[in-house]
Image 1 (cartoon, rainbow, N blue to C red):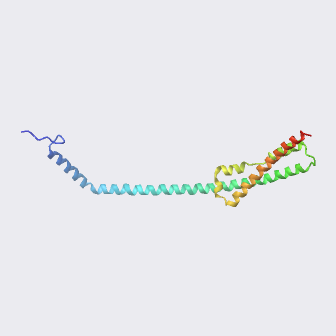
Image 2: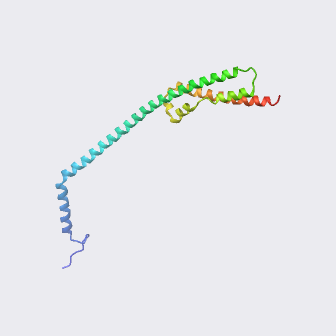
Image 3: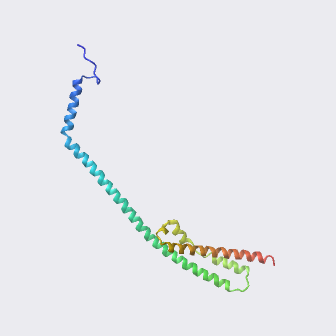
Length: 169
Protein backbone atom coordinates (compact mmCIF):
# COMPACT_ATOMS: atom_id res chain seq x y z
CA UNK A 1 0.00 0.00 0.00
CA UNK A 2 1.30 3.51 -0.88
CA UNK A 3 1.29 6.22 1.74
CA UNK A 4 0.31 9.72 0.79
CA UNK A 5 3.22 12.21 0.91
CA UNK A 6 3.36 14.43 3.97
CA UNK A 7 4.77 17.85 4.50
CA UNK A 8 7.43 16.82 7.02
CA UNK A 9 8.31 13.53 5.48
CA UNK A 10 6.43 11.71 8.26
CA UNK A 11 2.82 10.90 8.63
CA UNK A 12 0.39 13.46 10.01
CA UNK A 13 -0.33 11.32 13.04
CA UNK A 14 3.30 11.65 14.16
CA UNK A 15 3.18 15.43 13.70
CA UNK A 16 -0.07 15.55 15.63
CA UNK A 17 1.44 13.52 18.44
CA UNK A 18 4.46 15.86 18.56
CA UNK A 19 2.31 18.97 18.68
CA UNK A 20 0.05 17.44 21.34
CA UNK A 21 3.12 16.50 23.39
CA UNK A 22 4.54 20.03 23.06
CA UNK A 23 1.19 21.56 24.03
CA UNK A 24 0.89 19.32 27.08
CA UNK A 25 4.45 20.22 28.14
CA UNK A 26 3.76 23.93 27.76
CA UNK A 27 0.46 23.57 29.57
CA UNK A 28 2.13 21.64 32.37
CA UNK A 29 4.84 24.28 32.71
CA UNK A 30 2.50 27.23 32.32
CA UNK A 31 2.90 28.47 35.93
CA UNK A 32 6.68 28.44 35.51
CA UNK A 33 6.46 30.38 32.24
CA UNK A 34 4.16 33.00 33.77
CA UNK A 35 6.41 33.29 36.80
CA UNK A 36 9.49 33.64 34.61
CA UNK A 37 7.80 36.28 32.46
CA UNK A 38 6.79 38.37 35.46
CA UNK A 39 10.19 37.85 37.07
CA UNK A 40 11.99 39.12 33.98
CA UNK A 41 9.55 42.03 33.64
CA UNK A 42 9.90 43.10 37.28
CA UNK A 43 13.67 42.59 37.20
CA UNK A 44 13.92 44.77 34.10
CA UNK A 45 11.80 47.51 35.69
CA UNK A 46 13.85 47.36 38.89
CA UNK A 47 17.06 47.59 36.87
CA UNK A 48 15.68 50.57 34.96
CA UNK A 49 14.75 52.31 38.22
CA UNK A 50 18.23 51.67 39.66
CA UNK A 51 19.96 52.98 36.52
CA UNK A 52 17.79 56.12 36.54
CA UNK A 53 18.60 56.68 40.21
CA UNK A 54 22.33 56.21 39.53
CA UNK A 55 22.22 58.70 36.66
CA UNK A 56 20.35 61.26 38.77
CA UNK A 57 22.77 60.73 41.66
CA UNK A 58 25.68 61.16 39.26
CA UNK A 59 24.22 64.46 38.04
CA UNK A 60 23.70 65.68 41.60
CA UNK A 61 27.24 64.70 42.58
CA UNK A 62 28.72 66.33 39.49
CA UNK A 63 26.74 69.53 40.09
CA UNK A 64 27.82 69.60 43.75
CA UNK A 65 31.46 69.07 42.73
CA UNK A 66 31.14 71.76 40.05
CA UNK A 67 29.86 74.24 42.61
CA UNK A 68 32.72 73.47 44.99
CA UNK A 69 35.21 73.88 42.14
CA UNK A 70 33.45 77.10 41.09
CA UNK A 71 33.85 78.50 44.61
CA UNK A 72 37.58 77.77 44.42
CA UNK A 73 37.82 79.36 40.98
CA UNK A 74 35.95 82.47 42.13
CA UNK A 75 38.33 82.77 45.08
CA UNK A 76 41.24 82.46 42.64
CA UNK A 77 39.69 85.11 40.35
CA UNK A 78 39.26 87.45 43.35
CA UNK A 79 42.94 87.01 44.27
CA UNK A 80 43.90 87.60 40.65
CA UNK A 81 41.85 90.80 40.48
CA UNK A 82 43.45 92.01 43.74
CA UNK A 83 46.89 91.25 42.29
CA UNK A 84 46.01 93.10 39.10
CA UNK A 85 44.90 96.14 41.11
CA UNK A 86 48.33 96.14 42.84
CA UNK A 87 50.05 95.91 39.45
CA UNK A 88 47.93 98.81 38.19
CA UNK A 89 48.97 100.89 41.22
CA UNK A 90 52.62 100.02 40.52
CA UNK A 91 52.16 101.05 36.91
CA UNK A 92 50.57 104.37 37.89
CA UNK A 93 53.38 104.96 40.39
CA UNK A 94 56.00 104.26 37.74
CA UNK A 95 54.38 106.65 35.29
CA UNK A 96 54.19 109.40 37.94
CA UNK A 97 57.92 109.21 38.75
CA UNK A 98 59.05 111.06 35.67
CA UNK A 99 57.63 114.25 34.23
CA UNK A 100 59.44 113.63 30.96
CA UNK A 101 58.69 110.45 29.07
CA UNK A 102 61.74 108.39 28.22
CA UNK A 103 61.99 105.09 26.40
CA UNK A 104 63.34 103.39 29.51
CA UNK A 105 60.28 104.48 31.47
CA UNK A 106 57.96 103.04 28.81
CA UNK A 107 59.97 99.80 28.77
CA UNK A 108 59.52 99.69 32.54
CA UNK A 109 55.76 100.32 32.16
CA UNK A 110 55.50 97.52 29.59
CA UNK A 111 57.37 95.18 31.93
CA UNK A 112 55.01 96.07 34.78
CA UNK A 113 51.94 95.60 32.55
CA UNK A 114 53.14 92.08 31.69
CA UNK A 115 52.67 91.27 35.38
CA UNK A 116 48.89 91.38 34.92
CA UNK A 117 47.43 87.93 35.36
CA UNK A 118 44.60 86.44 33.32
CA UNK A 119 45.02 82.76 34.19
CA UNK A 120 42.17 82.52 36.73
CA UNK A 121 39.77 84.28 34.37
CA UNK A 122 40.74 81.93 31.55
CA UNK A 123 40.41 78.88 33.83
CA UNK A 124 36.93 79.96 34.89
CA UNK A 125 35.71 80.37 31.33
CA UNK A 126 37.47 77.25 30.10
CA UNK A 127 35.52 75.11 32.59
CA UNK A 128 32.18 76.66 31.66
CA UNK A 129 31.24 76.94 35.34
CA UNK A 130 30.52 80.67 35.06
CA UNK A 131 26.95 79.61 34.16
CA UNK A 132 26.35 79.08 37.89
CA UNK A 133 27.37 82.65 38.76
CA UNK A 134 24.87 85.45 39.13
CA UNK A 135 24.83 87.56 35.97
CA UNK A 136 26.07 90.75 37.66
CA UNK A 137 29.03 88.86 39.16
CA UNK A 138 30.00 87.30 35.84
CA UNK A 139 29.77 90.72 34.15
CA UNK A 140 32.02 92.26 36.83
CA UNK A 141 34.64 89.54 36.23
CA UNK A 142 34.41 90.05 32.47
CA UNK A 143 34.73 93.84 32.84
CA UNK A 144 37.77 93.49 35.13
CA UNK A 145 39.42 91.22 32.58
CA UNK A 146 38.61 93.64 29.76
CA UNK A 147 40.06 96.56 31.77
CA UNK A 148 43.32 94.68 32.39
CA UNK A 149 43.58 93.76 28.72
CA UNK A 150 42.91 97.38 27.71
CA UNK A 151 45.56 98.77 30.10
CA UNK A 152 48.13 96.30 28.74
CA UNK A 153 47.34 97.33 25.17
CA UNK A 154 47.39 101.06 25.95
CA UNK A 155 50.79 100.81 27.64
CA UNK A 156 52.23 98.99 24.61
CA UNK A 157 50.63 101.55 22.28
CA UNK A 158 51.97 104.46 24.34
CA UNK A 159 55.48 102.99 24.23
CA UNK A 160 55.26 102.54 20.47
CA UNK A 161 53.92 106.11 20.06
CA UNK A 162 56.75 107.45 22.24
CA UNK A 163 59.38 105.64 20.17
CA UNK A 164 57.76 106.86 16.95
CA UNK A 165 57.58 110.49 18.15
CA UNK A 166 61.12 110.39 19.60
CA UNK A 167 62.55 109.31 16.26
CA UNK A 168 61.20 112.48 14.57
CA UNK A 169 62.83 114.99 16.91
